[in-house]
Image (tube, rainbow, N blue to C red; front, side, top):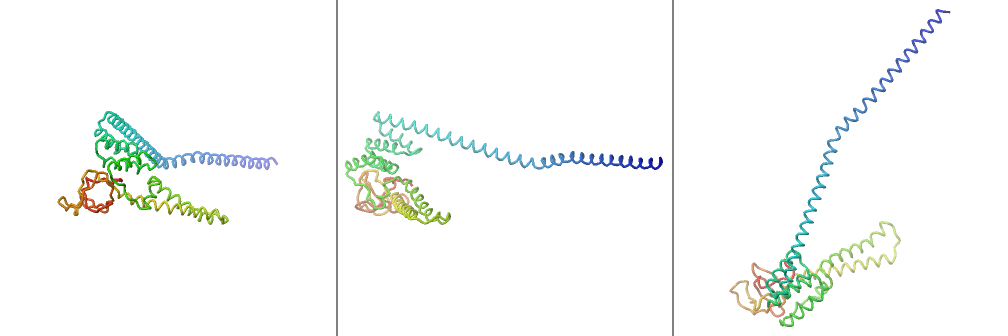
Length: 304
């Protein structure tokens, strides 16, 4: 009994001891696994970190470049606005002092940097006081082109043409329509009318809405706006060929040469339409005649 008990006890102890060893080995493997995983993760992070750094660097560089460009644009606009304001103030002071040619030069600098109806109105006044009726009428025509709602330009044109005894341009019906709004407004109206009409027809089918009379009314209204705006845009393009004779007794020639046969002479401020041009000459159509004039004697309302 004692030997058998001793053997059983030995096997039990051996089993317990081997179990302890197996548990220790399992714990060692678990610990080794835990210790290896962070290293593998750190290696993977090290492999991915250069890409992240590169992307972050590119994004930061692009952001910094955008900020610098924006700062340059803002600073340029501020400096340009300051210079424009200085020239405008100078032109106003020169006009008040009666120095009209110098005032006209100052207002021309304003218009080159930032065209506006106010600067063109003042330029026209300075040119009129300087005795340049053609240049004054051209300036007021350009002011009316920018802002057709400004009554001062229309009144100045009416007065100047009455004094100079010249007529205004002969407008076609679609050109008359184009004078109701500023040129850029017709472009926006055309786009708005087109999208409104198309949207009223397409959206009900896409979202499976019920057809109604309101949708058809909106579509018809959108396409009507589009058609009117497109007609006005054609008038705007056509009016870009209108201009004004700048100098007194401008020669209207039969051929585009300096020694061409004289057809007639034109008065300063007389309106005409450019048909074509060749080198330094323009072929124009006035209310009475057609012929060639020198480019420096004629000014387009819309500079090309």
